[in-house]
Image (cartoon, rainbow, N blue to C red):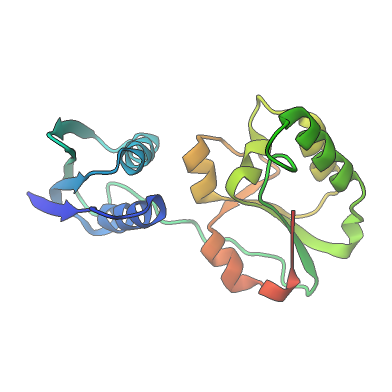
Length: 192
């Protein structure tokens, strides 16, 4: 059994390292960590991928035991996504509301901002971080309806979808933020 120390890893670092393990690990794998938030995110990711695992707490540390794996058992590799190649601006939506105090007002403001967007000025839309929460069935569909009406290529960050446990609808493609940032130019991003 191979042991891995995830001490002092952020959630992002731990998820990236876990994906590396799942691609190449053989046999049982043991992960040790202290941060409960990181542990919860790793467990959620393993569950979503259908990877058999056990958890136990030993004093102030957590142990996650991943059952015997073969490198091909789990494919957590993002599928190759082809982003539109034309030049232009991308609209990145990283929030599910504008502001952080009053959710109703914040969503109303976001809806107002999006209704003023001229879709013909954009190549596509990328939802990242809390922006993917707009795709949740519990959310008001006015905002997603507005985005869908634009008829632009729309993508959502895979890691954000997994973090919030959201299935993306058919009109949205899941993609890694890394592949998006490599395929596009930072100067062509407009953030909301």
